[in-house]
Length: 135
Image (cartoon, rainbow, N blue to C red; front, side):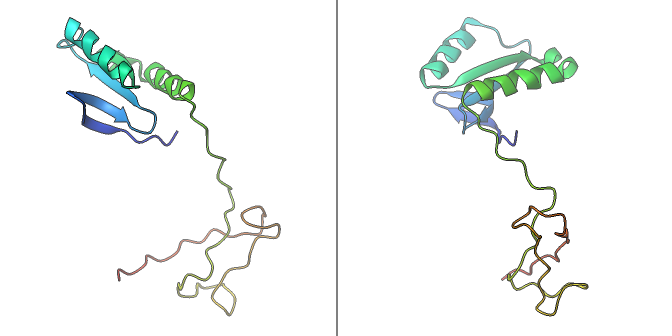
C-alpha cells in the first residue's frame, strides 16, 4: 500500500513500536513484557489522541504474517486510505531534462512519445536513463 512506518517513535509520553504518521496507526509487537494494565492505559491515551493501536503477539507476526498484514490493511482502509491510480505499464519517456542522447533516439535526443498521450500507448519505450551527476 506504500505506507511509511517509523520504528520506536515517541508519541507523547510513550514510544510506539511502529507508527504510520499519515494514518495515525500504531502497530505494537508484544512479547512477554506486554499485556499489563499499563498497556491498557497507554492504548486509551493514544486513542484519545486519534491513534489506532493494533497489537500482535510476536508468535502471530512470525507464524501468521499474512493475517497480521491483512489486519493492518483493513485498519488503514477503515481510516479512509484511498489507493492511488495504478501506474501505467508503458510510461512516457523523459524528455527535455538535459540527459545525453540515448542510442536509438531521434536527432533532438528525445524519445518518441506514445501514440495516445502520456503513458497510454503501446509505442512508448522504457529506457533506463544514466544517473545524473551531482551539482
